[in-house]
Length: 269
Image (cartoon, rainbow, N blue to C red; front, side, top):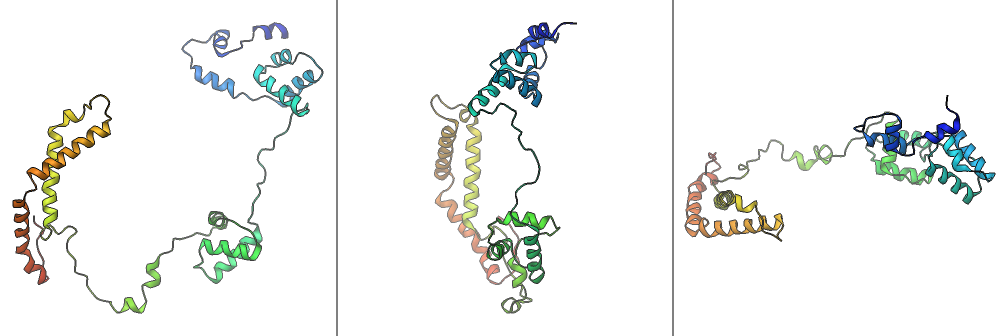
């Protein structure tokens, strides 16, 4: 059975030596081992022993080695103790109660307000708490407090409150007559633009190989933007002609009479 000193002398000081010390394969996941060593937690007893040795002027590095504490960790403990003159582990509070602004009496007041008027918004409750109790909270804080007592919030919509107004009742039974979303039979610009887009797509597909090879010193975005501009200019010059515009304008004339008479029309191009 090796003594404490010999065990400390044989203890590996880095991850690579640790692999050799424990007989691990070189293919072992070094990242996992490094993470485990980096986030290793030490007890207050280990820290107390090292700080006690350092306070008495002893070899704290040797004490850290004997207690299995990394040198850098022990050095940070000793350095902090020397600067703060506190030679004992400082207890850090974890968990416990958190400081809150909304107390039970505030929640009770909000519940009473909601029972009187269920249409109050979160901003209204924030204002009531500030006036009544002098506390400033956010709407999300109020929402969280109401959620703890199983109160739900809904978004405010204007339609239900206006549904029974006299202005709306005057139009009960009225049927809205509208055209189809694009109305291509009456929209000559839409038909011309459809020809324009089709030719742009054909131009870009024809020059696909050149588009995918930008020249040196030119970014992909700049190179593709140049070809898009070329495609648009080519389509406007070749396809969007005065003859096409006249033809589409004449095409819509055949639908004007049916539209004025409010008759149904088939959606055709």
